[in-house]
Image 1 (tube, rainbow, N blue to C red):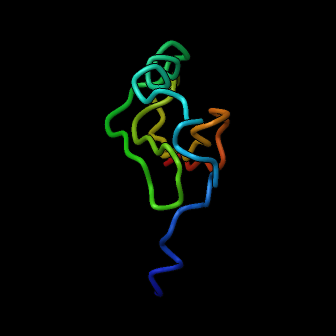
Image 2: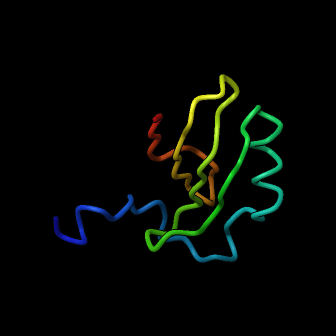
Amino acid sequence: ASPLALAGPQCTTADKSQWQDQAKFQEQLKAQGYEISKFKVTDGNCYEIYGFDKDKRKVEIYHDPVTGKAVKTETK
């Protein structure tokens, strides 16, 4: 597989000054019932979380850091 096949989505081209605060963003997700095991900023300018949803399903979700909307969701 090529490295591009493994790359995540491109979430935004907005300047980082327009991005939501990382800690506040994670708190919002936790308030929605998510359990976050790992949080990172991807090369595609996404906030990516690994963890569990409110139903305890394992998830990997890429979010637009400006709007907070999920761009790509994978449930394991």
